[in-house]
Image 1: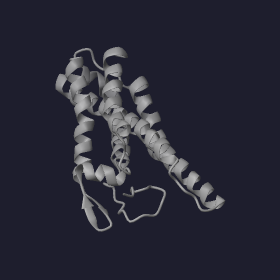
Image 2: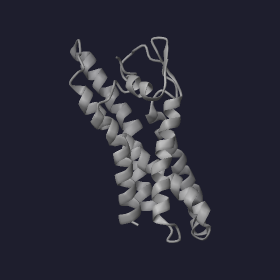
Image 3: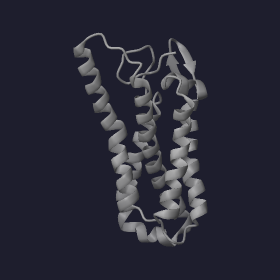
Length: 197
């Protein structure tokens, strides 16, 4: 089983729906734009409870999702690195450069933006129930992930969705990699909502 590598030419189609990272990348920038746009109106969200749940829920969940994607992607890179075979030194250098460039753009930049949003910009209003907000912030990335996995990816002229899509796109990740994504989401969301706020 070959993965849809983002640095190696393969038989897998590449569209916006191929990699979950693309969705996560888009979500964190939408959350960033919403946050910047709503900065003058944040006091209004303190008085409107439901608007607060929607806005803060989306911003927190998008940020936590990006952090989980960054951590999970580094685990994938570490676990797959040893199986890569290079044919010459120039390919080695080019491949590593491509990997580093794309890793910085799609994983590390959203991670930095997410941390800034969570630690500098967003403060959860006191009128929001933290338990409800926690549940909402954990559910949103999971729903987002399920929506992504329902869109098929074409590999060797076969369409794959759901768990098969995850296997094809991410080279059949092991249990630790698979479990790391939801675990990171729950742990970081809990730390942010219950400890830092």
